[in-house]
Image (cartoon, rainbow, N blue to C red; front, side, top):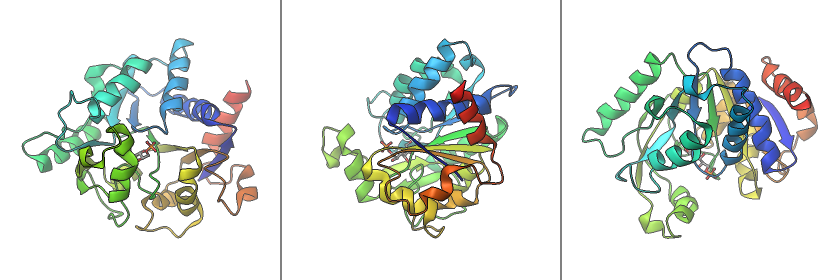
Length: 268
Ligand code: F6R
């Protein structure tokens, strides 16, 4: 893992977006994995800026969302289909027809999950996956205790996740769906590169467990320790509980290149 601590949320987004753009540029049929939630919003703003500067062609990009609530119609303002259209497709200029989101209203949810896996495989797999992290250490909606070998499937949201996400539903936990469809941990691990962003004190504990804790299902994000090309971009607050921060000042993983490349791009 390559750990980078940026000054603030905006700087987190700039650094993460540069790394994402670099991973997509030059790919004949680039595939981007997108997360919803607040964490990557500054990354999407910075990606939109990169597109405005003419440094990335968004029309060529195929995108796959990580997850979707079960039972929310796509037009519901908090369905991930709606959020992705508003915050990602329209902002960055991705092609709507190349942007895939799980259908949480499908009659046969199991087949929907299998269809999605198939579509990802047919697209050639994900070149770079953008991730946030839940305050309980989840990635996608793979809550603590999820199988590390899991693929896209139906999950029950942890009560803490429903509490965290109630802010998007008039602060009313009862409006937050109980079930979701989510890419599995192994599905996420299949991405060629991963860029995880986190900011704010509420993420500090999960971030420390992800980077320094034992790798296991109690903190699903900690499985990323086994992925060869992960860039983690944090603000000071999210990094505040790291015990070995001084070791992370230089890229040390065997991949090395993501951070170095993004730093170089940042310095230019
Ligand atoms: C979103 C997702 C989740 C979020 C996580 C953090 O598609 O899969 O794992 O990334 O819950 O959410 P925020 O960024 O809102 O704190």
